[in-house]
Length: 122
Image 1 (cartoon, rainbow, N blue to C red):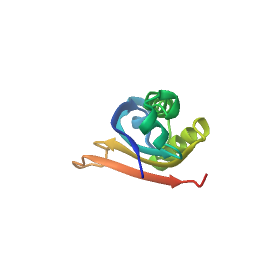
Image 2: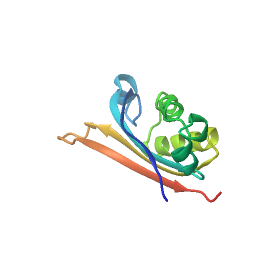
Image 3: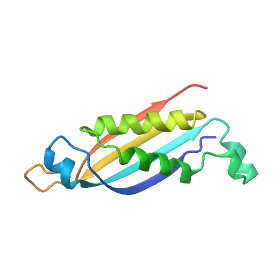
Image 4: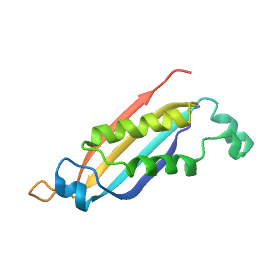
């Protein structure tokens, strides 16, 4: 059985980007996250919060990383992944998509995104 927990379209106003304007004014971002951990099936049967990785705690970790500016979305996605793995060493899989909405590219673009995916053996 493969069970994945997802947090979709987490919204943040943050100050990531290369340009001074992006660092000063900020922009809107979304983060989509999937994660799994070994023995997740225990929570499936126990219905006990102690047997899972709480998505409230995961959200808090993502939010903390979003509040620290990065020049590049690649760096930001990697930092979020590292912070989650450090805080929740039982994680075996993380997939993160960080999107900057309406990036300043001189034309109409809905978003620019980076997807970062990692798996670890336990």
